[in-house]
Structures are given as C-alpha cells and as structure tokens.
Image 1 (cartoon, rainbow, N blue to C red):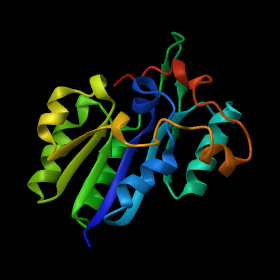
Image 2: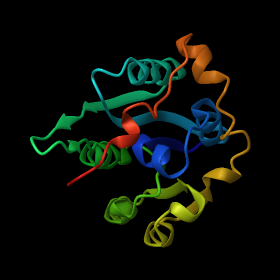
Image 3: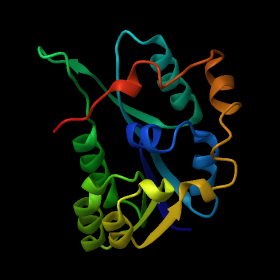
Image 4: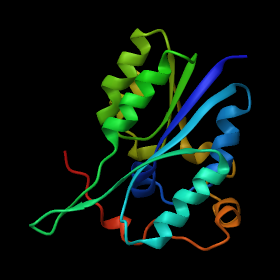
Length: 180
C-alpha cells in the first residue's frame, strides 16, 4: 500500500470554494492509501473564538493543524500566510511518502510540485474548479476538482459534531489578505 501525506491550504480553500467537509476529504485521500499525515495550514485571528473552535475540530478529526496568528499592520492591513510552513512540511515529509496530495488552487505552489516530483514523489492536487491555477494543474501528476469529491461540500455534520459548537471560519478570517 502506498504511503500518502495530505496538505490543506485552508485559507485558499475557504476563499475560493467555501466551507468543506474535512472529514470527507480525509476519507477520500486515505481510501486506497496508507495515510501518514494530514495537515491543515491556516492563519487565524487570536481574538476569534470560532477560528479556535475550527482548529480544535480539525485536530479532533486527525489533522495536524499548523497555524500562525495574523498580524495587524500599522496601515490597518492584515498579514497572515502559512505558505512557507506548507512548503517546508511537504518537502520534509515528501521523503517518507510515495504520494503528496496538495489541497489548494494556489499557483505559488507550482515550484513545490516540481521539487517534489524531482524527488520521485507523485504529486496530486485537489483544487477548486475554476479557481485552481492552470500552471498548478499542469505541474501535478494528477488533478481532482474539489467539487467532484462526493460529500465534500456538505459541511453541516462532522466538524460541528467534533467541536460541539458552531463555528464560522469566515468570521474575521474572510478579510485576511495574504501578502508576501
């Protein structure tokens, strides 16, 4: 059985697709492979209890949550980005798995896909239909449209049960602007 690791760009999926059922996504990726790690990467507002509940729920589902608090800049803008952590973890764990699944549509990860490929790792991308960078699709060994994963857009059950509270990632995080 092939070993797989999945890395989810939570901010990108939220902004381009909306809420998803992370439990369904986990089951989809691990259905035919030995799941070594599922990691979810996100910036968060330390004052937003809903985002803390969301991260807690992801953790209860089995995701390793890699998070970084947003920073409010003097000009009023917000900075929050976990792309570097995402790439470092994927490269580091890529040495121990056969397949890396990137759940994102962000074209900034094309070079990551290429680097993993040079290491001999099969790279699959699951991304939001028209919001996945075409270069990312071309670079990957396989692309799956996120909306084609049965049940992934049905979010009302699993995470809310895991956290026992209602949460809304879109609270203040929907205004996060990722700036490099």
